[in-house]
Length: 481
Image 1 (cartoon, helix red, strand yellow):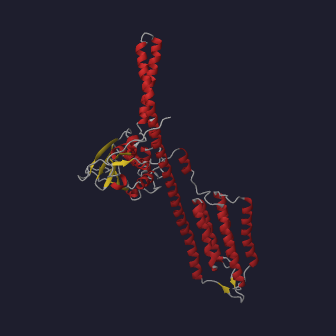
Image 2 (image 1 turned 30 degrees about the vertical axis):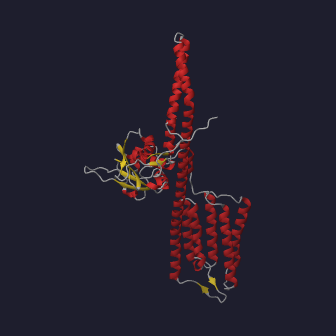
Image 3 (image 1 turned 60 degrees about the vertical axis):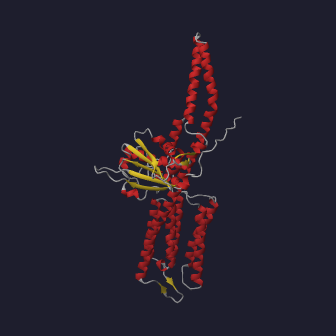
């Protein structure tokens, strides 16, 4: 049972490599592996935006004709606006209000918008119409809800249509016959501004949306990881209580079987059965003892020495071929009492991620220094590997950082795909407990070679310990019925 719990613990979101690698299993892997930009936007949202556009286009045409006496192709312009009205009405009748558009549906929806707007601009002066800037809207929306390929296609269409409008359009003519047009230089500047706007806004909107999406996924993974660690903690308490309560009847069975064995030593058939009962009872007792080793739901587990907490976090990685060394003691002579800290799942899970990361990339040894002062508590995890690459050292803790040394990483950890969430989860969980994390590389030895990676976790003493408590207190009694 304890081996199963350790295995479940290792299948967590903290399997990050130095380059922010990330491994998931089961449902969580499918959640993130199938994360796409499709199905992000509801049909109702785009339909509502189009109704606003229709209202604005209608108002602009009425004002241009009634108040400014411009001579426009009113009939064709009305037909162009009416096409949008028909599409909106059909969309509302055919699809439910909560319909979420797929990739292709959203793409064609936005393609229609940009073509409709381009036709309307063609009928009303082309780039001489200041409302030509609205061509940026469909591209910006595409950058937030579509894949990169669809966004590039739509952006390219916007650039082509903008270029055509700069050369071909029906003129804006006043009632007196004057043609309203911008100077050639201003037309060129407006065209160039639109092209730059299409490219810049698309990149900007996509980058911001991608970062928000990645952060949302990372925070979801953190919540799932913390929930799993909490469940394992609760499972340990249940197992420990079960082991405690079954210990007495098993001891009774072993005692009685031992007495029966001494009384029926002449009957080989009965003796064989009694020996089997005694062996199986002993086996059950050993299993329960190993199950109870994970801890009990008592004060000793809810509050534990910092050394014990770190060793528990490192336990799943203790037999992976790398030596883990512990250096424990006060950093000064001001306070030499061993700190008692709460056994919080986020602390255990965060430290376990960092230790696993160090073990994965250590050459032979991982050193964990645990020390404390009167004001803070420090855990430093260092390894004798190649260290953090300078390209990602300043970005450690951000989700989805690009992988470093991809070929070397795959050789060391062939089963790890890497999505950049492990370090983020560890950093987020430990900072949630009040810690500050510092990442750097150790100085290279004179003989050359890598200096190894160093991760320092620092908690304020008031955030992790209770200096007024002198004892753990009394454990609650179990109610058995």
